[in-house]
Image (cartoon, rainbow, N blue to C red; front, side, top):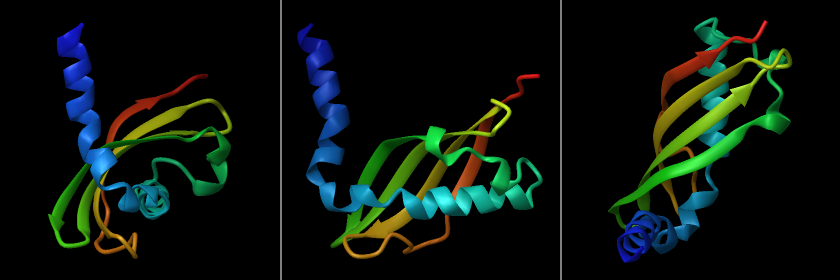
Length: 112
């Protein structure tokens, strides 16, 4: 049990230490939606944003005020299909869009 508690603390410590940049999920989310539409994976109007699940997987400090963010998004369309995407981007204490967003589709589930 002590090992599990220590593991959880180690995983959460980067998130807790750099809490200023953790509110920057909108930039990678919006850029990923645009990427999915351009790649003809799903049209943005078909997504149900109210069901989107957002998890910050990692937040690493690069230099003063600049962070690398890794997010896991699960998008759902209005038919119930899901699209899991991992993103990577740079953010600062003041600006969410310090870099382009790298998006990787890791799973697509079709429900018919």
